[in-house]
Image (cartoon, rainbow, N blue to C red):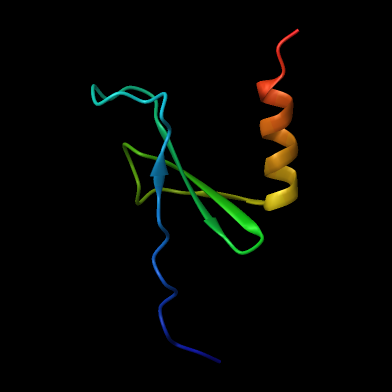
Length: 65
């Protein structure tokens, strides 16, 4: 069993987010997983999704009827 700390994620803030605060998400990609956190509270709980499920969500969310 390894006791080494995992490497920190490279978090990216949404380009739709301004510098005024408000609702903001950050994402970080690791092999096979996308991590999501609240930029205003980065130490709080995070979500993690398999990369293929995240891609399906983004495709769905980007659709405009």
